[in-house]
Image (cartoon, rainbow, N blue to C red; front, side):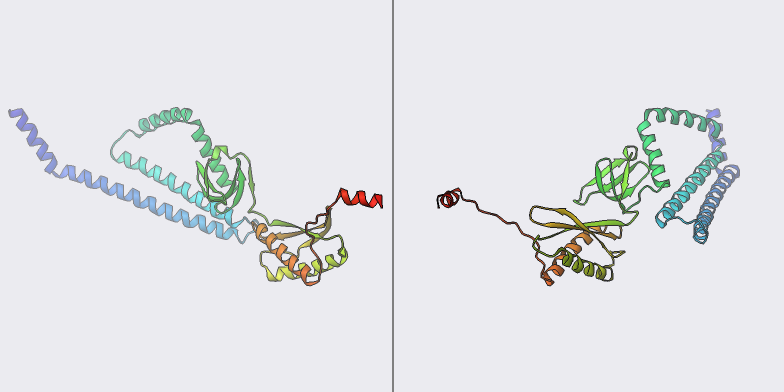
Length: 293
């Protein structure tokens, strides 16, 4: 009983004594200093990265705004992860833990998990290169892996593509092997116009060319004066002429509808007829009567 009472007295004395609380206070102060220095490093590093990209705009080598925003965010996030990891290791050291043994065990465990999750590792690596190389960004219209639509989200493991009918497709980055991006450069609107055989083709071309010169001033989506390539095809009841127009990215569908409407109205104004289906009735009875006559 005396030994137990002595041990209890020592424990109470240690808890109420100054040594324990001094140790706890110094540890808490060290942890606060580590966190404070980490936040300062992250804030200073973020400003440095931002200033670097701002100064780069004035240099001879320029990159697109989409790629600049992606790279800036990626570098800042990587800096934050590295600083937080180092801070976590330093905090563990304040608790007198064997950090070396802990890291060795984590390395072995990570290697085992890596062999068991090869698809996950492949997705993450592919996602890193998608972001770093700026293959596509949020808002772009792409076609990949049998899916076509607008990019809703780009992550390190998956990307989300929303089709124009509303479906959201979630694709692992490892499956994104070939990408067609329609949003990087200007698009081309292609329109075929039919004119009846009875009409004067040269007169129709003059009317269309005069109209095409007016369109860039009326529609901001059209970047240059559309071109009339000439007769594209000789159909069964019409002459088909083709018009192409360079437009802003992803505006070719809208401009194509505008061109059809404008050309139709202009041809009506100048009295040029657009062909319509025709049917010829043939009667074998009338032919027999003509032969008899």
